[in-house]
Image 1 (cartoon, each protein chain N blue to C red):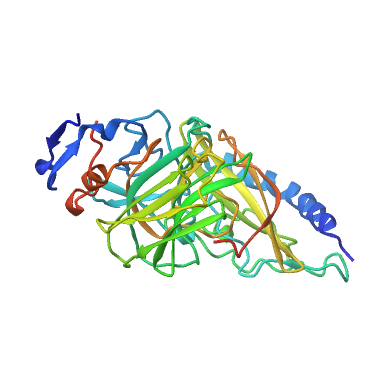
Image 2: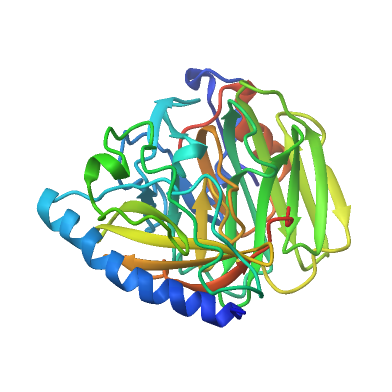
Length: 138
Length: 234
């Protein structure tokens, strides 16, 4: 019977191993990788059942932005992981202080959308703690 | 006394009021083809997020945003005066589709208070939204067409307005009360400045400017410039 905090903590633990893998890609290629959402349907967790019941396969690793050839799969960034507790996107930026990237993770809990973003680079203000996203706002 | 000078050489008609530099905070020509976009008047720069492209604009180039790629321009600390009671601005934009319910061409938010002001296009109509407390419906827009937008928020007189092209401005007295316009922190072009998901623009944006005062109708007409748009007048 996972609580919201329990789901967030599981995602944080899982993400702790993803961040170094993304950093290795950056260090190897010397350019930031932009990743569209890894899932077409976000992992959906509920407050009942086993803790891992909402984990689902990342089914969109073959997608890439229209101005970047490499997809997640092409970049070979992650080991094969059958089930993910949250979906990932990577947004890249080029600012006056240099380039960087922001890893954002999302999941649903009882239908509500939750999001977190972690910045890697010079731009401040990109970090977003776990936040409820109002999808019905104008 | 207002001084004017001809702008016929720019492709428009009429004259530019010399006051167009008064109270101007920033003016983004958006002529760059990639990377950081410069402020022709002020000192802030726009960070390029997810390799925003370019295309022919109203004057020179425009920024080209692909919503599916989450391409937008941003500044996370504009440093504009927190206490200014009035803000206004204009821009040109063209959308190639409306892939989500409320794409933003322009948005600003004060992160510490969550206050946000933005213009969105939903159901082909543009709206001026003030922190969710007041929404002012503007005119219908047309897909794949360059269109001019002017907006203002005047918390001193509890008023706001939005204008499309050279149509009559639509105003709404009430609802635009304190807090002051949140221009001092997060500014985004082509995406929401808030945390609402999927509000990206799909198309071009050009000639974005912001002021700390309401513009006169003559000044707005000069910015519209007979449909040609106006390059930075400084």
